Length: 237
Image (tube, rainbow, N blue to C red; front, side, top):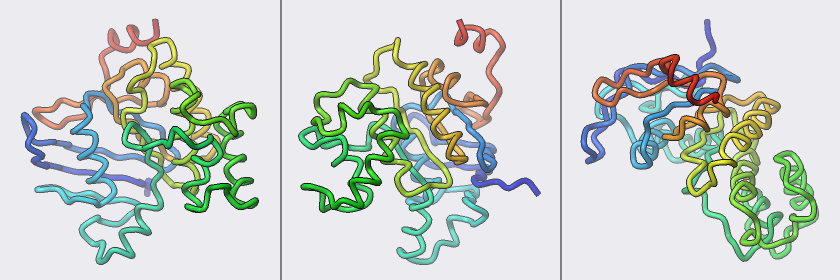
């Protein structure tokens, strides 16, 4: 049997948008990198909440790591489920006045001024893994450019060894010439981990660079379809 780490079927969720969020069928296998385009920020946030079990669908079924989110019985079980995801994007707040290492230490401890030696070592490993130059490690995050800030968010998402990484509009505020290089970098980092990755974006260029498979949402029906050939050629130019 195919090891789906995520499976959604016949999903309907009203979130007070123009229309409810609909997902006819979505399946992600272990280690797969998939990008979904056509998701604005409110829609992406609702989908992340459905996937993590923070909210339940009005109709349909969500299964993560082989278990229905409706079967999560208490907060302890839910927190254990959430720990299996690494989520990054514009909602992942960075503390600009603190250093790169301090921001990367936060998933491990709140004792970051300074972080204990063993925690600093973990943070340094993350910084090196995502390609942040060592000269930036003790600088305030506010001094980094947008790609550097995005990589800090990726590092924090990877800190607890997630089975799945979710990238929620990670290119917001990024210069256009930085989008494709960042996508390729993230794809390489997550692939080396062996984690599954799901990207929710409206940015076709980023989707094509970060994922091995891209699907486009038809909002009215909830179908996820392969992009047209002309669409793919436009992204690759």
